[in-house]
Each structure stands twice: as structure tokens, then as C-alpha cells.
Image (cartoon, rainbow, N blue to C red):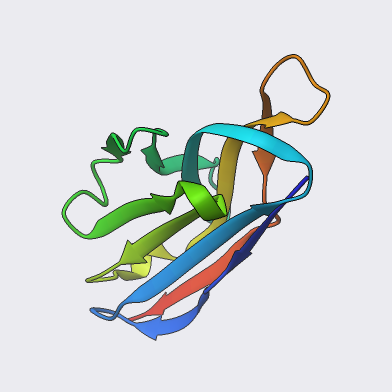
Length: 120
């Protein structure tokens, strides 16, 4: 099972980017999906999370600027990032709690990360 993220890049402050992440492989079900980020010299932190039912949770630093969404049929999660700031610069990782085929418990899955750079 893999999480493949895309959509990172370089953008000027005030601009927008959209990140996408798709789960592939032998996965039966996914609970929460989310995005984390890690800036240089800092710990990885939660950006946004969404349950299978669509309930959303955001870090205070991004609330009102970022929107998380998911497509359960495609096992995808997206992050629309607007009004980007230089402090949003980080490697963004997608995350999911997935049930692999043949497994009896959900495991935490991580994507490889995509770099977002916001210039001032």
C-alpha cells in the first residue's frame, strides 16, 4: 500500500497551491486522512485532518486559509492552500489510517512528502 502525494512547488506569498494524495494497493478501508508538515529544524506537525464521514480539523495557523477534502471512492485526500505565507514553507506529508487486505487492524500510512516553498 502506498500514499502518493503531488502538487507541491514554489509560489509567492498570497498565492495558492493544491496538494493531492492517493492511496493505492491492497487497501480495504481508510479511516482518517490528513496532512502534516515539517519545516526545517522543526518537528512534524498536523496541518489538517478529515474523517471518513467528512469531519475536518485544522491547525490554528492554517484555519480559514486551507481546506481539506477527500474522495472516498478514489481513496484520495486533497489540501487546498490559499493565502500562503512564507511560514507555510515545509515538506508536506499525507497520512492515512488504512486497513490492508488480510490485516485485522488499521495501520498508519505515510506518503513520501512534497515540498512547498512560499517566497516573500
